[in-house]
Image (cartoon, rainbow, N blue to C red; front, top):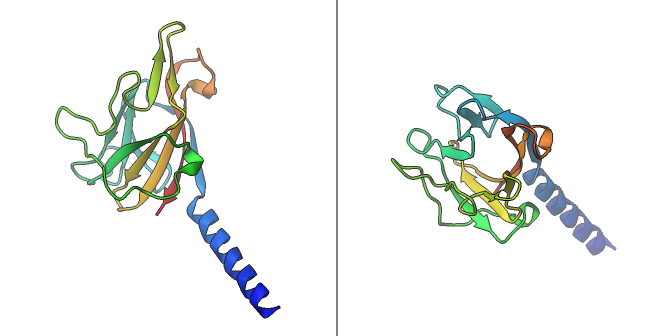
Length: 167
């Protein structure tokens, strides 16, 4: 009986730790249609560029990292949906550099596909951004929509995404 209780307590602790580490944060209608929006993943808020704690910036379909000042690096993990990315990869991260972005733009190259038939931009479901933040923490991030109120044919450039800190 005591062994079963101990196993139950250990399982409950493991589950609690996993749930806390996977707390999901969401952002709706982040307007990147009118210019660059700098974002701090730690505070889950847009910030001024002068705030050196920004991690990621959005401008239309382009994503920029705070690689120069914040040493932020990232990669795209393909073939997994958001819920299946439980741990940050050990290597393969890239930084933004002059003339190149760690998160490539263009249909099928990064996080989205462009549909020529209806001229919409759709996030690729099995692509998750894994980001090492300015604080050295790892985040998995999935863009869920590019349109205001998450409705196709509404104004574009309105990022909707979810993310969680991972180990």
